[in-house]
Image (cartoon, rainbow, N blue to C red; front, side, top):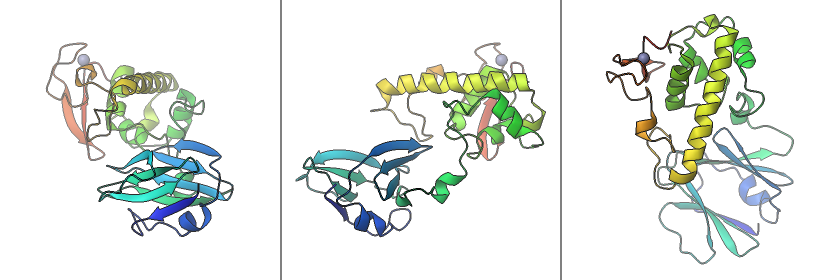
Length: 248
Ligand SMILES: [Zn+2]
């Protein structure tokens, strides 16, 4: 990186001074993702990026004129520029010193496709919890990245009613649920590979076609497994649909 241009001092939060004082001259030694954060690793630390609702990152020729919402440019040794555009500014650009973990990342649960996420893990974490299993599964300190749509579909696939108390679900059923989460996310990622570019719905569910959903957004419609009308309610302040026959 040869230079950083900030066209405004803040996005969702102020951009820390380290971004412009420490990044120029550093080599990018790694690129990672944790939950919805992107980490650009350098020797003194990592730039931590979140794209928010509307942000995008593009690598462009250096002479590409900046437009209204192009807030940050990182000049690369290749002569190109890494440009962060974010019309709604819900995104952020923060700094994580080497050897430390930023507060935003500190209490996050495991990635759902990692080995740390399993039925046994969910079972152990859920003991003594009276919250609904849906609320439990959407808690970022339990597991990251399983949004409303994927929770609804996973619970249907595992046959678990969303309002069931998390602390009262058996180890075996958590095994089925962990497998369902993995299968559904893997499918969505595979789909996302072909549809992400032109389909991102407001719920942040790229990759899923409406006709593939069993319960999400289908309250009052017929269950695709048993034909009965799906139920709908709100749980954890989010719309929830499920089949009272197929999910117990
Ligand atoms: Zn059903």
